[in-house]
Image (tube, rainbow, N blue to C red):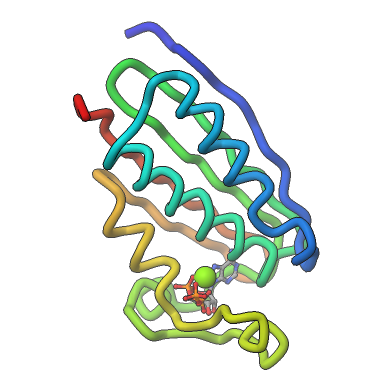
Length: 143
Ligand SMILES: Nc1ncnc2c1ncn2[C@@H]1O[C@H](COP(=O)(O)OP(=O)(O)OP(=O)(O)O)[C@@H](O)[C@H]1O
Ligand SMILES: [Mg+2]
């Protein structure tokens, strides 16, 4: 299996002015590679929700993107408070978002559930006071 593309995008915690820059860039690159339709839509959602979560909750993070002929892997690692209860965080509607974050329109508790719904394989691990590691694999379908 030959690797087609790999790159890393850093995301700064707390910087909402730059929210969406990494995920829009990722979407653009993958679109230019010929990935489209449902596959592109799922990758864009997963990248965007991951980026917003880093900005909302972590100090800093990186979205590693790896594309093979068969799948796209988003490997998202951050340094931050971590997630105390992964089981809760995966549930629809669970959120610890601050008022400031909610005022910006986030905090519905739908980001992680959305990422999971878009994934063909999903892995979320975390260490409290260290950080969070999210791995999302999306198969490249013929669309
Ligand atoms: N990278 C992260 N670091 C620490 N905690 C996180 C991180 N990502 C998510 N969480 C925790 O998991 C909860 C659920 O995340 P999720 O993205 O599903 O919802 P949300 O960010 O609260 O709201 P929404 O994504 O709908 O705007 C968050 O409220 C937060 O407590
Ligand atoms: Mg979120």
